[in-house]
Picture (cartoon, rainbow, N blue to C red):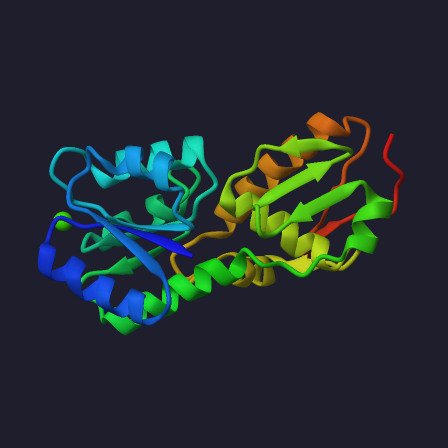
Length: 228
Ligand code: CA
């Protein structure tokens, strides 16, 4: 697994590199905002640790571009706690955040947790009958042969609901499945992600409402119907 560290303070970057390499990850370090997208494209990291305040280009701007072009998970590193809801929200779609000052151990734990979320339990047998195929290692989902263009949060949401089709997941359970620390994320954020995912599924199956809202309870994915 390749981890890209974007951090303009060499001492911080060096400590992170040491801990991440000790945990078995391959690490590259970029110390400014301008080179990030080149390394993302050329090296294809499995995860980006992205500092918010960078010379050359703002971390928010970089996060937005990574999100627009790839499904690579992004952990934002910031001392600006007032930005957190925005970082995790729809506009930027970071997968997690770490507040400075942090302990390097905590960073390694967060990296592991975010990468683990991309490993949803969804069996091939279910996929064959439902027309929905989720490839966790490639972070790719297909419905009736059509590749779905999902954000990482939408991908995890779909994988979570598809892990037990027909089961109702409460908003809290959805939040637990999507974020390690959901205190800063509102119900409205979940609803927005569900709405976007539903729209993308409906692009492929316009006559079917695959994600049902159970009023006052939560959401469930219906996979019983045959592909049209
Ligand atoms: Ca910085």
